[in-house]
Image (cartoon, rainbow, N blue to C red; front, top):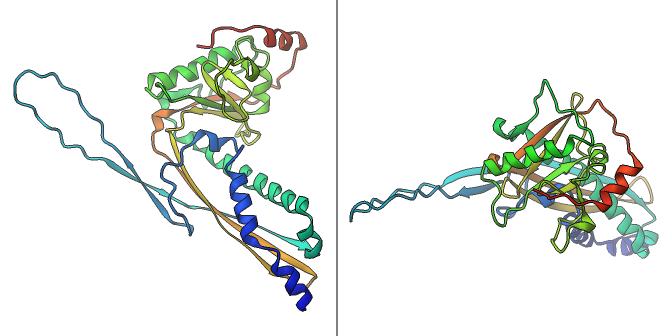
Length: 305
């Protein structure tokens, strides 16, 4: 028993927790499209992050020596950490796993992927917060995409953000698509692939730019009632807070194994709906690729606005 205890004690959950937290901060598609300005400390499901939004300031014309001072009342919103997810698995023969860093990293990578799937799906589901005036397409008449019309639809999406004053100096818009829509986009001559975007910095994992928006691809943008909800916006729109609350390990009394479990808490709040836009796309058509069009795309650049 002492031998197992000694080996087991070397298997430190804090190491897993630190590494997994670092991994979750990178690469996840939607985490690049939100802000964490109010993350704070999160320990338990139901914790609340207080978000304070400053009031608008009015500019008036000076017509006399009397200046009237407006009373500014900032608004307060609560971001509730109401999403509680866990993972739990067995690890056989702790001595071998502890000695093999590659196996540990592989388990961490799989845990990261599992968390990102539910997290991305949750954040993409916030398309329901998009105001009607920022919506392109209709629930009863979703947009039919093809390689000749996709640019026009993405221009409408970008225009909705600009008309809402969501796009200004320093606020870079993004749009998240799935592989099916990517297939149309790659055949559009107006699409600028990542390696053609000169010296400008794209978000990590972005495949390029269309209508002034960084394009990211997520397989978690799935079909809903034969429609895709393509989400676009700026990072000011959604505030996100998360915490890998804990990773624990304990000995399985029924086998020569260790039990590992982790608790991940998160929540999000659409604090500025005007900074979001969406394109409702029909999912009925299957995209096809034409090699000659793809080749032309890589050689032809069209103004990106």
